[in-house]
Image 1 (cartoon, rainbow, N blue to C red):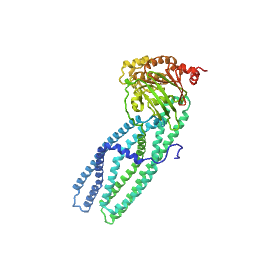
Image 2: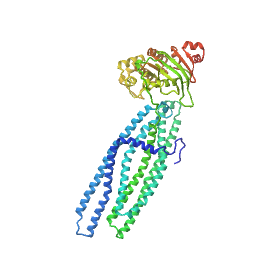
Image 3: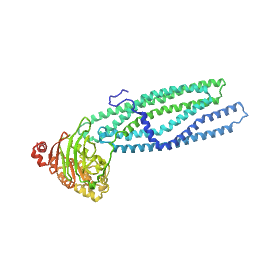
Image 4: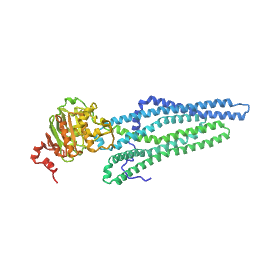
Length: 595
């Protein structure tokens, strides 16, 4: 199969040993259960190893009867048969309970990994998600961990039982015939060499396969969420072409990895059959010469088969271990990502004690080192003031809000709330001081009541209805089946404007001492906007408010308007003062009325 053109790396795994070591650390809490499972596996394997010996005894009893008719072997054969039944039954029970314990170990381990990833997501800075697709992150949480869970259950017990089987059978063969054991052992180095070569070649394709799967999931998630845009611009064919390219890449890496790893079993089986044929030929010649009895030849041929079995199992496990290592590498790569800086919390600012005085002092910031957005930003906001932030797209309006909320840390400079540096307050504490309405609405799947109480779990239904009435959404909610108990889903027939009104109501219910409104009425019609503006004015009474707006008519009553351009505050004042200056703000404002 030809290799497709793509940006997928086919290099070797970065740290397979490190990933497997990290995986072992997750298994450590389950060490007791693992030991029990391994002991059961060892007992079951030993029982299987002893089976051929007793089968050979039955052959020797039968041969003795043929040579001497006066000997009655029935009692010995029956006794040996009972022992064999006991051995194989014990082996089956041990393998069953070994699988039972290992299934529990696997599920507890993957449960812990998912919990750690969920906790890790909340500790990562927003800059991490700015540079990666959501689908790739989801693939690590779902596909990669599922692969680890599926493979762990097989590899641990099978690997130990294969080693025990190999050592035990080899010892039994040495006891029976060292010379014939040497013949059987000739093929072992050949099997190991083949295994090492194939594993080394196929490992890079397993790693590439997991990355291709993550990229494909990312594209599917993006395309699914943007279906309206794709259809509106007639880009279905182009999107399908992109999907097809990624799908072919996944097909190629999957085919290469599975084909190469799939070669292990037939190759190991072929080498094992060579060993078996050699033993049969040599054993037959030795039996004809009278050096060995038939029972010895029977035992040895069965042990030869058993000696090849663990080699084939280990060869089959090669692909499983590689896939598990590739998935583990992606999971631990995510878990080891740099987290948000550690917080040295020196003080706590309670919401009821917050007055809302905010100071920006010499703030500089850039999302990347080579591209600075905010330059030496200074601003003083007094308690209860309404601060509007305006400017062209890309001027840094939303960035100011992100810094205020500590979504990002400043490159230099400080931000103070009530004369307390925000770096001395926990991020959770800072977030509790602000109610926030974003331009992009977000409502999760659940009841409408749960969505509205998201910022204040103690809110009563009466308080919720007061906020809904202020947003002119009380009639809409009462018309829904179940009212506040209506289950909101992505497919719910709710307009973008209605979603935005619900998020405004949610902010009202939170009742935080300060507000951030980022284009809070962008999806609302003109008439409703006037009503909402009245409700928002009431909400902002005695609260420090930061309002980002493109429609400048909505912020004419702001106490201070900050005009940003290229990361700098170029003008500052109220609406009348800025218009009188006839500067950049006046140009922006008057452009609304130009045809």
